[in-house]
Structures are given as C-alpha cells and as structure tokens.
Length: 85
Image 1 (cartoon, rainbow, N blue to C red):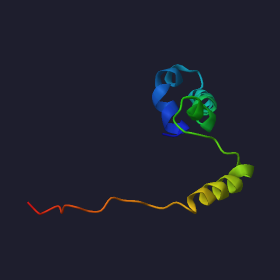
Image 2: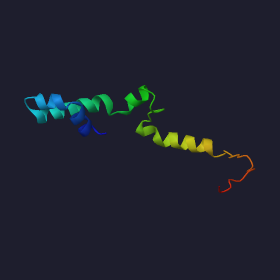
Image 3: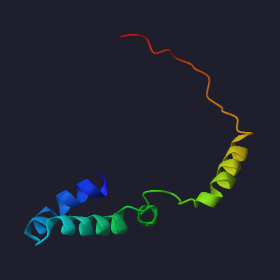
Image 4: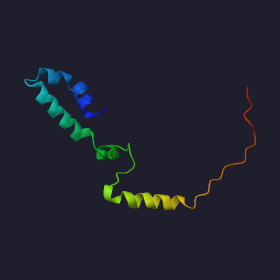
C-alpha cells in the first residue's frame, strides 16, 4: 500500500479532527514515507536480504551470473509416474 492510502486509513481520525485536513494529510503522508517507504527499514527487519546501491548494480549482477555459469543441475532419475487416478 502506498503512502496515500495508508495515511488516509491509519490517520483518518487525526486528519478529520485537524483544522486543515489537506495539510494534515500531506504531513502524515510525508511522515509515513519517511518511516516505512524505504528499503533500509525492510532490510533492518530482515524482510529483504540486501540493499544494492544503484552504482553497484551492474557489478552485483555480473558477479551473480558468473557464479551460476558453471552450475550443473542434477536431478534424480524419475522412477515412478504419476498415474491419473
């Protein structure tokens, strides 16, 4: 959910009671973006593994592909069929 919808749902009562609801909504959107809409909080809580800086993206993708270049997929031989029942 984006900051627009989240701020309207989470802070509906505060926005409704404010003297200027439009200004209060804008402030709550900014607060929500600062607190929740960045990858560093997700990484801190373990929701994602790593945050890659834009200047390092090419290096990280190349390194990952080089690691997979020599990978061999080894599956066990198929012994039984799944008969239609």
